[in-house]
Length: 254
Length: 92
Image (cartoon, rainbow over all chains, first blue to last red):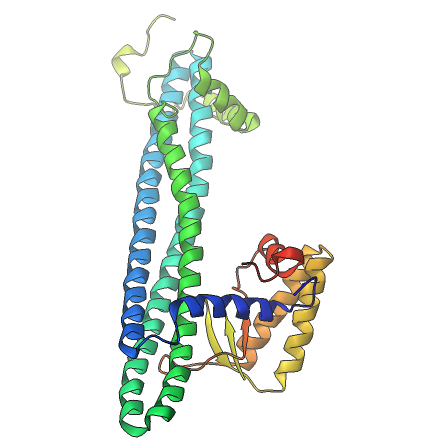
C-alpha cells in the first residue's frame, strides 16, 4: 500500500488487527483465548502498579526539592548577612535550579496521575468485556449448533480481542511515557548524588563542574532579582525574618 | 456504525456520519503529507469531537468489532507523520 492511499483510520485498524491476530489465533480454543484475556488483565494491573511506583518516586523527589529550596533560601540569607555575596549568589542559583526542576516535576506527576486514572478505567472496561465474553460463550455453546456457535464465538472474540489490543496499546503508551520520566528521575538522583543541591557551599576554588553547569542552567537575571530582593530585605533595617540558624557566628570575620 | 477512538473507547454513531468522518480523515492525512502540523491537529480534533458529540459510548457489556478505528487522541504530529505517510504505512 504505497504512498498516501491510506486513511488514518485504515492504518490504525490494520495495526489493531495485527495486534489482535497475535492475541487471537482463530485456531485457539475458547478456554485458551479466555485465559489470554485474564493474562492481559493481570498485565494491565502490573502496568498500573508501575505507573504508581514512578509517581511515588517523583513525589519523593518533589519533597526533597521543596526542602532544598527552603534550605538554600535560608543559606542565601545567612551568607548575605555575613557579607558573602558570592556565596549568596551560588545558593540562589541552586535555589533557582531546584525551583525549575520542581515545576517540571509537578507537570510530570500530574501527567502520571491522569495516566493512572485512564488505565484504571481501561482495566474496568476490559474486565466488563471479558465477563461478557465468558457469559456469552456459555450461552452460545448451549443455544447454537457447533457450526453456528463457532461463528458467533468468533464475533464475540473479535469484539473482546479488539478491546484487548486497544488496552495493550494504551498501556504501551503509558509505559513509554513512564519510562522517559524514570530516566529523568534517575538523572535527578545522579545530580543529587553529585552534590548539585549540597548544603556545603564552597567557593573560592574557581567553581566545580556542578557550579558551571548551574551557571548555564539557571536564569541569571532571576538570580540577580532574588539577590537584590534579599539585599533590600536584609539591608532595610527591618530584617523581617533573620535566619535563626547559627546566629552565634553571625559576625565571623571575612 | 461503531467507531473506536484508540486508547479511549468505542462509540455508536449514525451511519450518516461516515462520509464526514472519511472527509476529515482524508484532510488529516493531507495535512500530514503537507507537513502542516497546526492543520493536522485542527482536523484531528474535529474528528474526535464529531465522534464524541454524535456518538454514544458502548457499554462495557457490549462485544462489538469497530467499523472505524481512529488513532489515540494524544497522537503527536511526529507519530502521525511516521504512521500515515510514506514507508511508515503498514509497517511490519
